[in-house]
Length: 226
Image 1 (tube, rainbow, N blue to C red):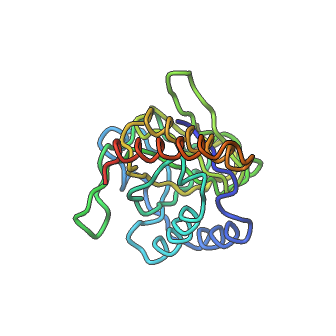
Image 2: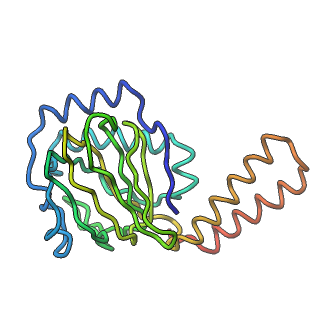
């Protein structure tokens, strides 16, 4: 499932992060890349073990916890601490698939990367190029969103970032281990949840709504992996 979560961050929080990013030290983005992706990755990142990275990441994590669309679509179990990158002119990230398992820095804990997420922090008119291209069974999808918008998609997807030709592309990115490993099952539960919400808003037949809600939770109970 490819889904846009609009306005995850409001303008004041975006401005705060942008100011912090402007003053932050940047390192080679290949420090967090696997063997395959490291060969095609050309960008810069904030070192993930710094207090600033943790502070900025907490802003995003707090917003995710308060966003019902993200919760409904992703059904998060564990979220990898957000990272931050920048693409200056001529930088890009070639076609790759994200690592299936990642170790959380500073701990022995590992998460399975079911869902990838990119939070755009630059406005589209601030840079040329830099589109996130995501390939699935329905073809290639080009994503370039407003600052504060989030895109989530299966981490198993082949994807890339096209070369930036003007300006700077700033973004946050992270991975999620979902309660539901299978993308098709997550999509089914998301569609069912949204339908139930619409029925609740229209005060439709109460018995039918109760039955559908029960079915949703029974499927979640059947498929979830705590």
